[in-house]
Structures are given as C-alpha cells and as structure tokens.
Length: 244
Image (cartoon, rainbow, N blue to C red; front, side):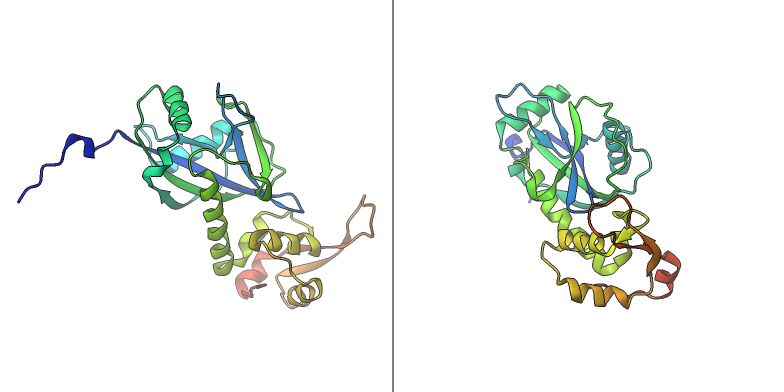
C-alpha cells in the first residue's frame, strides 16, 4: 500500500561542507577558524570554514574552494571523514538567521559533509572572503561555536587518532622538517590529550629508525639547545613502527 506523506514531512534542505584544519605550533594543537560577520549582540563569533555546496560543484570541489577563498591556501590535502545530519543542527534561530542572510534563501534543514586536514601552522593565511578574519585557535581554548562545530572538532580529533594508528607518518605533516624530541612528544600529547612520560618516550623513539637524529641543535633559544631530528620517509616505508 502506498503511503502519501504530508507536505510538512519534507523540508527545504541544503548541503554544505565544513573544513577542520589542524596545525601545531610546537606546543599545542590549533584549529583554523573564521570570524563571520553578524549583527547579533555578542562577542566574536568564530566558526569552522564552510559553505553551502554550489549547484555546479561536488563536495570535494566545494571544500577546496572554501579553503582557497578563506585562506588563499590552494594546495592542501583534504579528506572527507563524516556527514553530520541531525535536525538539531538548525535548532538555533540565530544560526538560521545568519545562514538565510548570508545566502538569501530560506533554510530549514542543513546537512554538512566534514573534511579534515593537517597543515603546517606557519603557512601564510590570506583572507579574501566575506569573513572578517581567519585565525588559528588552540583546541583547548575553543569558544562555543555555531551549529555543531564543537562536536565536529571533537570527532575530527578522534579521526586523527585513528589515522595515526593506521599510519604514524601522518604526525610529521604537522611538524617542521627539523624538530626536537620535545616537540614530537608534545604533539602526541596534544593529539591524545594525555601526558607522556619523558623517559619512556625517549626510549621508544630511540628504537625507531625513521626518526633520524641530526648533528644539529636548536639555535637562538634561551635554554639549552636540544638536538634536532628529521623524519625519513624512505626508511619509514621500509619499516613501520608505531610510537604508541
């Protein structure tokens, strides 16, 4: 028997992309946020970079457009990791009001496809978009963001942990080409949100051949200069050993 659904079962649904870009500043993990223009009586309104998907583009194209328009970054690896479809995403009238103002359309329901990327934090940001500013914000100091963006960041951190379990080389995308043991340890601590024993960590990386000690030390530091290391991709491909 055919079931005829009432019209109010259907909503004006739009699909968007949101990009979670992580960077590491040698001490803590940061996420790339934008400040949207709003007339609402509140402090700075920060959110993840995102956009509705245009009719002529697919989700991947939209995600790359977002980062190019918002930051000037053209060459960056983005991986689609999850869709967020809860009706609760558009329960806040302030969020819907901003969306309808920004896109000049009625929007009852918003589904977003989230993308995740790791980026060296020293990349220059060149904001050429409608947003007021683009900046790095420490993950542990995130404000309350619109929609479910805080949840998206949390779930993307879990995704990074899964990546690291599968491919430990991923962490080196966040580090400079030459790094200290302390920087590497702090990065793992930021990703897993737990402290690691310094001595145990030293023992573990000492046995990993693709983390190569250099005959170089830090320069221009107030404390004792630490030895520098590099990641050897060739050695990594020959032998994969996890730090965990």
